[in-house]
Amino acid sequence: MNRVMICSSYTAVKDSSARTILQERPKQNDYLNLHKCLFFDIDAMLEYAGYYNTNNLVFDICKNKNIYGIYFGTYGLKTLSIESLLRLRLNKISIMSHRDVDHILRGLNTTLKSWGLLSDIIITTNRKAVNKYSSVGVKAFFYSFLPSVSFIDKLKKRFDVVFVGAFRKERAYFFKKIRDAGINIKVWGAGWHNYPELFGGDDEGNIKFIEDGKVERESMSYIYSSAKICLNYPIFSDNTVYLSGRDFESVLCKCLLFTVEAPTLKDYFNIDTDIVLYKGIEDAVSKLKYYLINDKERELICSSAFLRIKSLPDQKVILDNAWESFATCIEKKKKQSIIDTIADVVKRVFLLYHFQSIDFCNTVKFLTEIKNEFGDESFNKALNLLEKDGVSYKDLGGGEMKIDFPNVWDNNLNNWINND
Image (cartoon, rainbow, N blue to C red; front, side):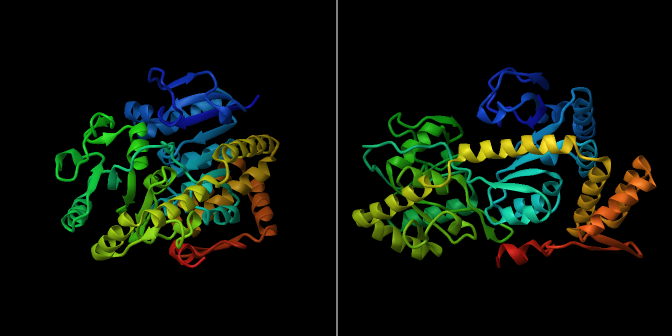
């Protein structure tokens, strides 16, 4: 049976055992049952040994423990250098990564144009990115990061307007303006306990806290199920609004979602029938007052959004399919010729240069190292394979290189994220 190493923090794999760097444990869930897994706590290793030693250790473990595939949790992939990931690929190790920040433009930009190019399988939270990954030889599965909350039936709608999320100065300013306009708003989350005029408290013991105003998951279900409206005030990133868990947590508890325009909202909701958009404080106040007194209209929108999100593809099936595809990838790569392996890695070096993730000097360095390790003959055969696929490069001199790819998008991510 193939061995797979899981590189992630223990919270990501839901492990409750003592914190150790490396250990074998019983199967955790259906996704991991395909393989005999070796769990590597990459967060603990980084803290213990530092970045350089962690990179070397991951490679050494793969070599000594006969690892054929590595799964990286949300942030695990970024803890290894591009050089280390190229090295793993040259040793026919398959890579799958789970990126649950791809719906954020900055997160997608980082993944798609650098570390993501070095994966074989990607689980992404951006539907539009699936074809982009595919065009560079990465198989992607769209996963809508639905949160683990549930509607609690027969609860009285005791809260008019709520917000659950971390304190930010701009949020405090906005919510105070909403409160001053006569809207009864209550907020929870890290840091809000220092603002008693807005903080919702424990609601007579019904709400449990982790620390500093942050509520437990079960209490989040209680808050949203007991609220008429969730007033979302998202944080902007690179002048773009991104989605967060509360967009779905509120809807799954049949609480009306108020939010602002975001590029990926239409991937999940019908704007006209599932949610309410607002622009600025005055617009928010006007619409809040309207929907707080029009119960039937509010409940109709809530029901529509609830059914739409509930009808999304089963997330467990998607993850199972991703792991099944990963198993196929591992078997295929084990049988891959060394020329095909070199061609695959060289192509990814070219892509990294194309997307300006590595400069000319590092591109030449990586290509030279591959040529020195496998010899001129194998390297040139690999280049010939790439040319047959329409991939070619030419050293223009002066520290520049021209690379041509078939069907590869513009290296300016904004051009397609905004226009596709």
